[in-house]
Amino acid sequence: MAEYHLEAVSPLGGYAQTFDGLALRELEDAVITSLAIPLGGETEAGAIMNSAFGLSMPEIGTSMVTKDNTRLIRLGEDHLICLSASEDPDAANQISGRLNGAFYTTDQSDVWAAIEISGHSVRAVLERTCPIDLDPEIFRIGGSVRTAMEHMSAIIVRTDENTFLLLCASSSAESFLHMLETSISVVQ
View 1 (spheres, one colour):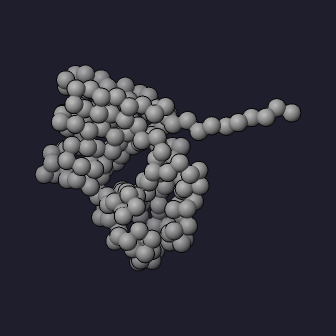
View 2 (view 1 turned 120 degrees about the vertical axis):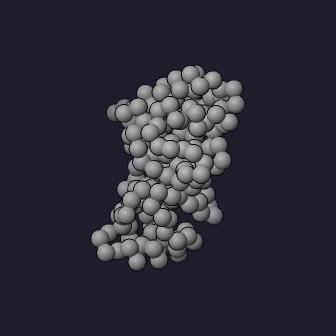
């Protein structure tokens, strides 16, 4: 009987490129867990969030980073995304265990591709394809939103002054990357 060996491959194969002061890279070891608050479970979820991560529940449209560098992204009234970095294939289950049943959790690591874009002209690049006002006074550090970029679903998080995290569907990650590269070439 034949022996098979399966190996995890990220949607963009570890892509990393620099373009005259702009850096674009895939976050290969992203563990992405969807957290849904059960109906009527807001109080318990908030308490567990505090004990599990040492943070209060983020406001809708914001994200927070824990001491262990896990990012909690609040997308809606009862929905968050938990983003951490790990090569452990059981990392999403470990996050679920930390939350002690206060959330419905789903490992979304294979569903999304995580891309970081940073540099001096990052807003100009993103504004070509994104309908969100990315003005620093409006879309502040920690801000997050679910939107469409060139007709592809995306989650955008501003993680630093000139750095953004983009989550896109892994099935369209290559098209999404091409869109970003094209926008970079036009802006520069």
